Image (cartoon, rainbow over all chains, first blue to last red; front, side, top):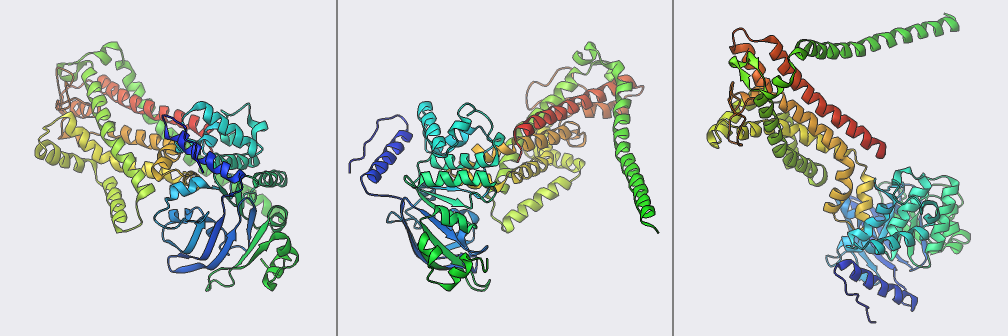
Length: 287
Length: 288
């Protein structure tokens, strides 16, 4: 495949060019943004919290991680963009690949990984700056300085996160003036602006009202054609509504680490689970 | 006791508590107003153009305090130039980078202890270290270095405190976008913490501007004909001028001394008020 190189004074345009090439690859069938986890374990100090997770996260689909509180869903999610590195004293074992490339080894720089794997957090966390600057933060970090390029990116990503029509005339407004739901859609736009292959979402609607939740879910549905989404959720109806694959995790006692009970097509998981514990959980008998 | 009586009694207790607490709070305001009022009442008569722009005459019994003001401004600016970079960067290190180990704990302990050292001890240390050992002589530089030692813990603590107020969520958001830790700090964390850092720094510097003991041995002089001409020059200073007048000038002029005090207090208040206004303007923009 030929990667089109744009001649440009700054490095940013080159990054964009490479991304465009990847997006082209995706249109021509070589879908990108798939994870493969093999025997992944996580320990906080000596406390083993997750063990033996093996699963494949398909590209351009929504994968939901469900399970009771404290079952390690969010911890597992943070393995995918190496955010656990920032917590200190966290050891991740096993093997995780993104499009076949090992992301845990020394060869992968977490900074580069996080440009390819964005994250949306539980509570909306816009930066204390304007709406425009929030979305442009990632691209600027990548070295993009051109005002037109930034404006185009900001508009495109705000459209993708269904916020554009509400803010197009007030991009200079402080992000804190937006409502909670709008802030979360801003955070989605901000994560999209680095043109990631994957977006990780850690209970993105749990702090929002039902209407805002609905909007976030619509946004997720619209996004999955262009980006892989892995979402942690407490809300099983939500998992059933929006995901293609569901993974059910469980930590049966504080002495034993959490593990993956089963993973499969969402429809099958919710109608005909293989494991009785999955059935108990989704029918609301515990959790 | 019937229910109504109990409610009536509770209401009375509530009323008494409110009065007592309110009186205590009001008494603080009263003391502040009294001190300020006293200084203004006795000093305002001295304030005129001559006082602010002329050199002292007759050992300070007459004339103005221009070189005294200039000396305090120079030492305070010198202290700011030394304290702010060191203090803010040290605060950033402690809040954002320092591992939780014995070295970090030792640094924190050192800072706490630095804050507890009496200012006269700093003066003595400054004399030994900066005036004599380092060879700066009695000078603005030696005094500013001494005041820096005294002010650093305030600025470091204020910086660390302000950085701690910045939600962890924001750091995570920046890191998750592929920003390095350094970029996260200067693009997100420091701007968000700036109001707190600046307010704390100004309060620390205001205290340094009003100190006598640290400059006593390190460079402040009783009388100079000229304003200081460089960092190695000696200087006059507002707090020391007040001290020297009262202790060594027979027949000192109370109006001029109160006037000097008024200039010092007004300068410090102006800086604090400016910091307060700026901070509340920032707060309207930034709320968590």
